Image 1 (cartoon, one colour):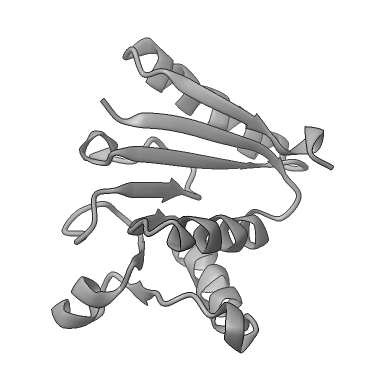
Image 2 (cartoon, helix red, strand yellow; image 1 turned 180 degrees about the vertical axis):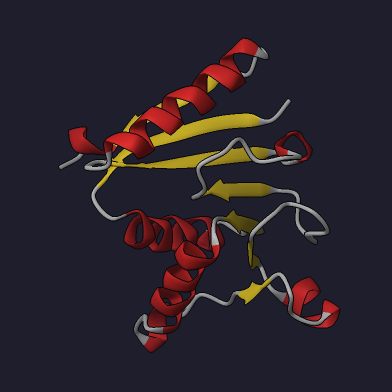
Length: 143
């Protein structure tokens, strides 16, 4: 069964996603990042603007197959036809279709957006109602 984790109170979801991706990649994980076009664009730019020694190899879902297969991180608007099924990082608003195919699902929830928090509560309820064990990480407690 997919492991589900919520990371609450991220002051900047895109910046936090960059840190999470760096850490997961350092551990050898292969990831799919799910989000809307605007969020994925912001994340793509943030990843390209990291210091050279912190570069995180990634591509968009529409990249050629040989690039998708070689990239440890794929930025995608949906889970349809993604090459990796190890870790799914959801920056989107909805429960990701097909999340159950992944070993792990990480949900990132912002600190200051009440609507984002409300949508996260609905996703939490969805997973809990289906019997998924959920791990909660409160980033405000780390500050």
